[in-house]
Amino acid sequence: MRRLSVRARITIGSLLVAAVLLAIALLIVRSQVGTILSDADVALAQGDLTSFVRDITANPTAEVDNPGTGVQVYVRNPAGVVQVNTLAHDINGVIATRAATTEQFEFADDEGRDFIVVGREVSTSAGTWALWSARSISSSELALEGLDRVLVIGGIILLLGFGAASWLLATVALRPVARMRKQADALGTTLDGELPVGRARDELAALATTLNELLARLRASSAREKQMISDAAHELRTPLASLTTQLELAHDDAGDADALAARLRGAETSAARLAALATNLLELNRLETDNREPASSTSAELTTELMGAIDRARMLGLPRSIDVGFEVRDAEPAEGAMARRYRIDPHSFGRILDNLLVNAVNAVSRQGVIEVALVHGPAGLDLTVTDDGPGMPPEFLGKAFERFSRPDAGRATSAGGSGLGLALVHAIVVTAGGTVKLRNGEPGFTVEVRLPEM
Image 1 (spheres, rainbow, N blue to C red):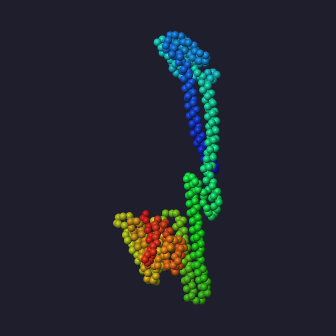
Image 2 (cartoon, helix red, strand yellow):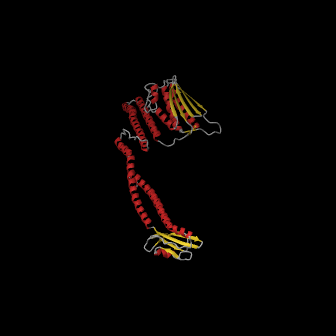
Image 3 (cartoon, one colour):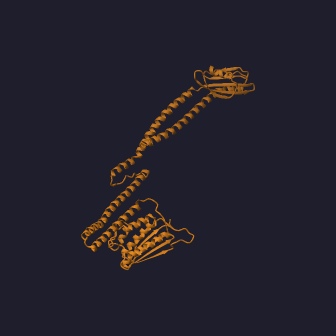
């Protein structure tokens, strides 16, 4: 059954259901017609006795007239004398010894003919009369046999017609699927184009719409991957070229220890930049492809991570006398309450802090000021990083979270950033179910991160 086409399975399934329902309907029709014919035979047999019952009731001592030809009747008076007997021999043998009673039964003679026999007991002042009549039911049986043939032949014709109609309707209903499959074959590896959506607002149109949305997401994902590969190649080319040049020059300075040390320090810086770039790319890829539920942290763990990030930022800003301050408000809930938990692990929260603080340190001038606020409020955790740097160009704010994006001037351009820091921050925050916003100040720059409680 699984190897059959959908059209064939629909047709076969419809035929099976139709066959069962049709068989039940035909059996009911046949039973009703048989009951009607049987009741008609009984009524006719009883009708043959009606005139005798009327005469006997009116004059119980008179002789009963002999019925006409073709009527099978048996009449016995109270004295046991049979006044009328036109029954067939086989039937008469059964009735002759039977006591007067009101009943009916079927009887088959030696030749296989079937009869309906009706008995009637008539009580009069002269005593009890016994009346019997018989009617052949062969005509009814022939009629039922003919009806059976008609029902069987008609049922087969109906099933064949229903099967053809089911096949045709299934073909018409699945025609959009054939068009979608043909169009899908024509899309090729580039996934250019869309699947046809029918005019009817049915399940197939909804399927085509969903598949077109999937194709759009696949095209967007493919475009992002191609752009990422292109950008990564571009970003890796500069530090690799610089590293290669520094190593080549180090060979020339083999006899000068100071110059060699300077070349090696430069090579270490290039290697560190390459390592940071690779680490950020791997982290972004992990966030986009990992469907596992992220780990959780308490407010105390996140506060501890903030302390470590502040220390690291102060070390970076120490040569330029940069002031890095912080504030933590309502770090712990009231005594007896459960500790707040957030859908983010301390390491990821540290990555957010490090990227935002490094960007801020690189953006501010000598003796600049950076302020960090961590607030555990009723709506969740709010992290705000503010600096007094030049801010970002307004037209760049909308694409600041894209990979390898950098403003044309101002922030991080001189520091040689890879353009992955804010993209990584955004990916981590979104994975944790939060939001991140960028805002230019008067002057300065502010990053606002909000993480909801679990």
